[in-house]
Amino acid sequence: MDEQKNQPESSRNAGPSSPPPGHEPGAVKRHRGRTIALIVAVVIIAAIVLVRWHPWNRSDAGASAAAGASGAQAARGGRRGGAGGMNQPQPVHVASVTQGEMPVVLNALGTVTPLANVTVRTQLTGTLQTVAFQEGQMVKKGDLLAQVDPRPYQISLANAEGTLAKDMALLQTARLDLKRYQTLLSQDSIASQQVDTQASLVRQYEGQVKSDQANIDTFRLDLVYARITAPVSGRVGLRQVDPGNYVTPSDTNGVVVITQLQPISVIFTTSEDNLPAILKQLHTGTKMSVTAYDRSNTTSLEAGYLETVDNQIDTTTGTVKLRATFQNNEGMLFPNQFVNTRLLVNVVKNAIIVPTSAVLNGSIGSFVYVVKPDNTVTVRPVKVGPVDGERTSITSGLQVGERVVTDGSDRLKEGAKITIPADRPRGASGASGASGARAASGASGASGASGASGAAGASGTHRRRHASQTSAE
Image (cartoon, rainbow, N blue to C red; front, side):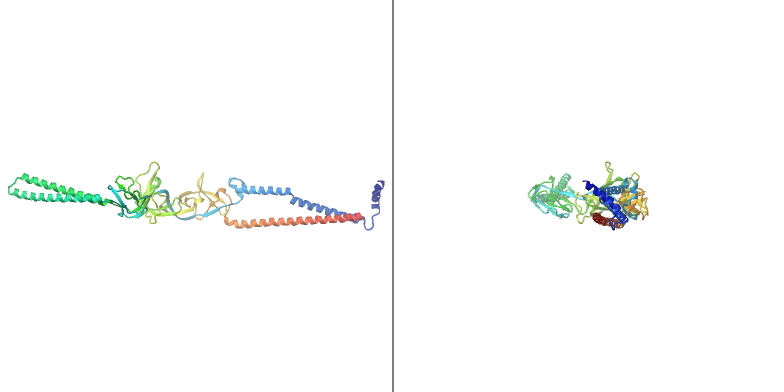
């Protein structure tokens, strides 16, 4: 042990006093300085790599990304307040204010009502022999629908004609006797009372003949009624009675129902406030057009004209009924069908027109967002005129050529910045450039990391070589 302790002391004492050949003190110091500098450089590079790629740095990056996302959300919610939201341009759709004709249209829900709806009943009692129509058939006025057994009425007619012939003969005889009596009375051969009695008998037979003739006409009319014909032109419904049944005029359902389809009418209601404008057009003789649409109010079924207005206002609802007529040549309107009607009352010339979606309602009333030349918006109160679906007329507040916001107004307020969708392609290219920059920075970081690892390996190799040289010395 003493020898091992003494050996290092002797080596330490011998080192400085007698340096080996080829290793002068200045060369050793320079060599150590280079080694220390290399070690410091490796440590710095390793620290940079650790700071850049360590997991806790990633969490910080995620936190910063979350902060950026919350900032973007705050920018989108700029309408709720915050200076950051005002600085972020909001994407919106805009439209220009135009000038043109604006129709004054009244929309209402109506019911298709036929001009004639007839329940065909028999007008005499008897057995129904035949039915001459098919269900759903279109018939014309006077067409045969059914036939009641006419034989009892033919017999009654013959009997009445025989009674008439007998009474006609009696009348003829009474007239001849009256003529003779009048001749004898002129000769003062008979009493005048007998002549008067004969004249009364003649008049009695004349009355009997008229009664017989009326009976004959009645039975002839019964024979006409035995042929049941269509009282109006229209479409027959389902058959209510089959042949062979005994029918009477008191049957509630009758034989069939005929509904007139061409022309046909639509009855709808409108507010009493619209009545003066309608009556003004009717009094001047103007035919106001009415268009009937289906239940979804998208498909036009038929076009017609306003026929008349009811004679009184319903006090419970404050509305008045109107009837419009349609030719219905294609049969698109069906009885009792619910339709949407559009009554064209007037046409406003040179009206200021904007899309309906641009008009908003608030505490100040109706207003729009007007786009300024610097791509900011301002609130502009307006007065709304007639509305026609997707178009709205403005009576005051806007000028032709100005631009208004039609979509995205829920994120705006006074002075907010906007961007129009036409500017989005430039934003897209900027985004791609940013992604390219991030990719380039990632690639440079990766290459820097690989270079740092290579430098660290080289420094380790150099240190091993230096240690071997020192041990060899």
